[in-house]
Image (tube, rainbow, N blue to C red):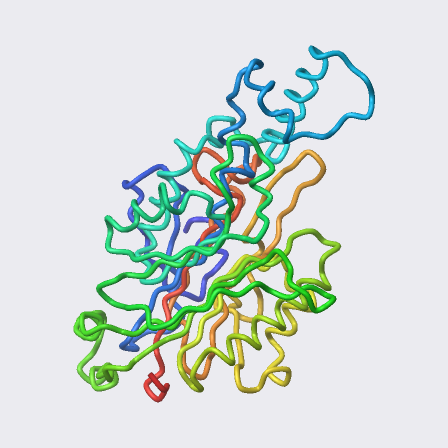
Length: 388
């Protein structure tokens, strides 16, 4: 038995095809079997091109003269040649030091972009929730639309990507769904609160998706027994609610993330219908020890919307969902989640996380994986008594 299989002996495993690309191998971990109506949801921080140095890492010395306005203002008087060299090295540091062990070619968008699409497509998700998207209009939307996805984008108010030369605009959150299975009923773009009650730079997108007639037909042929098929007869107004977000990073911002989490849950409760399927995804930048994680778990804090993390199996989250090595430190932790309401949804299976050995000592991103975050994907069963 492979090492990764030995780590999770309780669950049935299904190998994905490894012939489609040279991406890290993934496997599905079965949790519950034999329930009819299923929804597969992907959560993926795609690593913004503007922040990983994939574009700016390849400029020439002469190009740097055009980028002085993006860099620090030096308080010392230095000659023009020294100034150009200073800006050049600052830009290279910004481009390379974020992922000091990642091969430079693996950071180029021309290499990472197709791999991101491959990872999304091989998940076969019905709904895709993405963060750090700064190529929505010129890449993600046109590429995913070829495969039947409809997409929406919400940029950050003041994206850090705008501080980098040759940026592609603000990064933000994106929501894609299969147009043959869902249609958008309503959407709310939300700027999350800060600790003083004002608005932060972080955003969330909330959406109500209605099951289409095509979806109703599809679910009756997807691993459904004769006994289960009566539960798949959906009304014309059958809907689910989905939210995608990206909380503030940095260890010192724990309090801000707690405020953002409380605000998001309040908004989701107000936006959604009682007892309907509800899913909240995102890069929360919060390991399980943080207060915001406890708040999501605390049913007493929001009794009308109990939440559970889909990757919390046998009481534990994965060892990591993000692993990166920067100049100043190595970070290996779980900070990405797919939260769901257990009163209306049940986890059928989750997409297994690649092992540390499979990834390698250089961590993420790497030649075999295009982001510093691993994509999460959960297949949910809709509980038959849920209000659809």
